[in-house]
Image 1: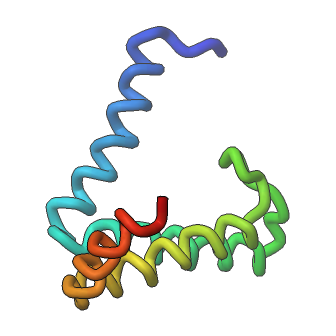
Image 2: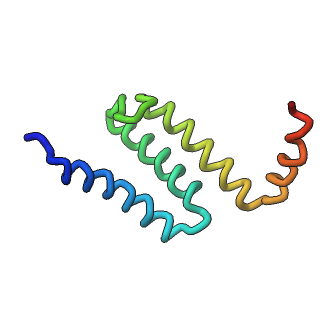
Length: 95
């Protein structure tokens, strides 16, 4: 059965509803929490036999590496804001 435009838009809205709910609960930690959970669930899916995904990158272990890295790096910069300031000081010299 083909979905109506209303059902398609509701599906998109529901995805953003989930993101907004996590943002409301996690506050400034939303990126490390969401990306860390994403990585954990891709590992669980892979362990349970799911070897591909609907995501653009297609492979659960590749996505785990990507989102796990995003989680760790964003958490580091949240907990060590001076490290981010150090990166900005280096930016003009990288050109």
